[in-house]
Length: 598
Image 1 (tube, rainbow, N blue to C red):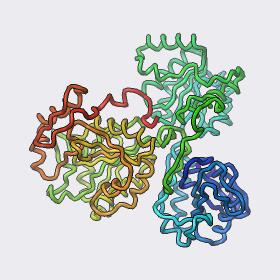
Image 2 (cartoon, helix red, strand yellow):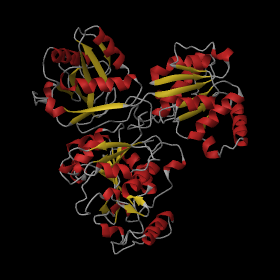
Image 3 (cartoon, one colour):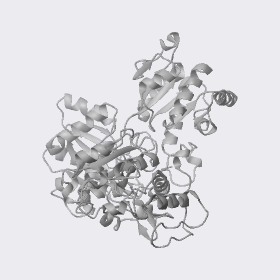
Image 4 (cartoon, rainbow, N blue to C red):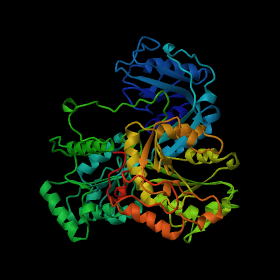
């Protein structure tokens, strides 16, 4: 979608109306992923793609009908279906395509806000009710049209930065390739004579500075960013690599040069205090083995490796690879994702240069049984909501976004939030409706393909538990689960990790039952835990003084979790005894840089 915004802008400037056609569901295997988009102008011009050319003509006809006044439509091309005009999908899969006008009607303001954020390189999404907009459909799928329902979320993750240290020919060639792989090039070089020859027309930025100063100017690195050392000058390259691995947040760090040069480089960095875990993040020599020597060929090999890493692949020859070329994206007929950006935050292997996972802390309730602002109540010297925020921030992958939903006691809860932990506050104005309203408010602001929901009134949930649920839940969601949640003594608890399908369907929640009604209808991966933190909450002030919330009991629970493999955990209060055979939590994923989706 990001590549289509400039085309839409040009068409709008010329006075040409356009329709947006997006793949919103995949059945089996399909040529392009969920979120693939095609735009159609009223004169028949097109940009983008939704298949390998099989159904574009059909969809273009329908798009022009929509531009002439027809209602938005959801088209279904089922496996083996011949399409509307004799074309079809020879791959054996099926897709659903949603067709709507761009820049007109009730969504115009949100579409423009979305486009403005995309133009700025930021992450963005907007959600709308497909069922409310689609009012006239043929229910017969064999006619190529199916009824629509639910909500659709269009997402454009933030644009990743390709930071190229050393303004030589390879950097210039990479700068030209960067936009084609969804990245914004930045060339860094402290040498005026060399930087003078940098291709400033291709690079969005040219910084004449030492790498550590340039990286400080560019701001914090994110999972979507890559730093590549290309200067062949140890003083420059080493400074860049040290700065890149010190922050620990860049999704990819690489260096050009031979294997011998790389070993010497690692020795120099060890001498400057870099530890082995940080050094292991540096990919060297960078690039796939294409055999080329020319700067353009070397640049292509590096760009190819970035794409392969984004999608969790080794980068070998397809003719010699086993298994499917692309993972099946079967969605059961309903899915809503736009997966086009640098890796690590979306499903399978797509991130979201945007946030890998959005943490959503629910703190909007009135606390009627508690007698007031429960989320602001203190335990062990911290407000409950502050503990929840710190647990989320400490356990989620680097670069994750964090949202706190407030409502009934907005001012009091805001004042209790930790100032030293980055977060965004979202107000659930209809909080009186119940937890469903709080969930909808928080998830509507998520900028990722997955969300971790935490409750502010569970003070025993810590960063270790959050990390454990993420580490165990992400692979399960990649394998087909809709969500993952911890289970203690056969009791489901929190935090709950929502994948793309569950995240989308959560917008239909209502009442005060939270996620329970939704999760009962979905495949939820069970994350067994050996203590009661995930199922222990606070309802009344007295709960803060009783076991299992007494400090000594908490110490026992934490010790049981830390004692990996040394017998069953002992509950702090009369509770169902936990099975000692249950899987124990492993080390936190933050000890390495692999992203949990991979």
